[in-house]
Amino acid sequence: MAVRPIITIPDPVLRIVAEPVTVVDDEIRTLMDDMLETMYAAPGVGLAAVQVGVNRRVVVLDVAREEDDRQPMMFANPEVTWTSQETSVHEEGCLSIPKIYEEVERPARCKVSYLDRDGVLREIHCDGMLATCIQHEIDHLNGILFIDHISRLKRERIVRKFAKAKRLLNAEAAE
Image 1: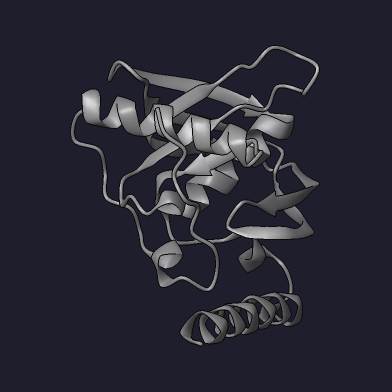
Image 2: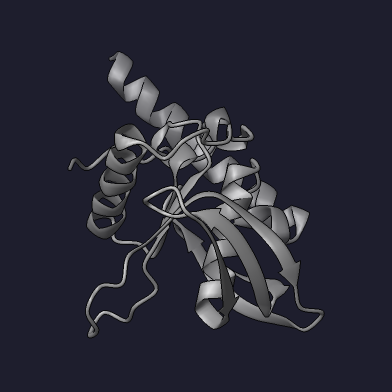
């Protein structure tokens, strides 16, 4: 297993719609393992393959509390098949947008179909933190960031901040 670099905004890779996984093989399982190690090292509770520069529909999650044992979850081709009419608001952050947190409203519950680590088609019913996280990560697979769910003004301010930081970093590296 290896920790992979996490891509941050404004990198256009984060806006790409990820390609489906055709078969869950050793390559995909290695990707899942690396993504879990990367997520835990960050630390975070979810990670999509596009965030580590891999254009595949793969997500890993672990919403267990810090004091509890790890409960890693791995998904290939996750797809929301149902959402509740009821919504909930949670403060979200993102490893690709470090140190930025905003309240986002999403469906409170959802159903997701996916292929597990062995390539078996499964379905999971999600609520609470799990529902928020899985929807956030599936958004990544569709080129959508959590800041797309907040006001345009806040979103543009955040993007400008990261673009400026990247320009300054590139200028320093060129010297």
